[in-house]
Image (tube, rainbow, N blue to C red):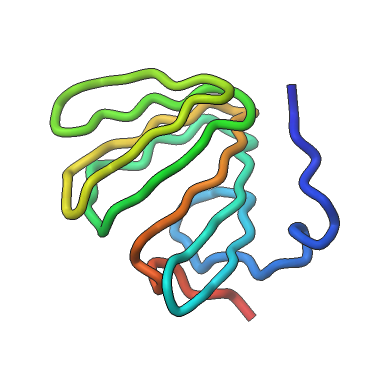
Amino acid sequence: MTVEFPQFIQQLPRPDSPFAIDARIVPSDHVLTMFYSMHDDLEIPEHRHGPQWGVVLAGTLEMEIEGVVTRYGVGDTYYVGDDVPHIARVTAGYQGIDVFADAHRYDALT
């Protein structure tokens, strides 16, 4: 199953991200919300940042949080605590929404 993000979401700015993701962000002064799709498998190496909450819309995601690996599917939510080391492994076809407590986690590309 794939989700077709509506046009108003597709027109949001893209994040300045070092990873090959098709994403749109909603910058604010409080949190950063990101809608994204993965066209290829991707592993995001271990990293840390402020709290993050996400929901899987399509495909699968594997998160390794503090050494514990959990696989998430459609409808599952996940949470990464503040400054907790984690690795994300996403499969081609994955779509999700993430909300980062770090309001400036990604800058918008112009």
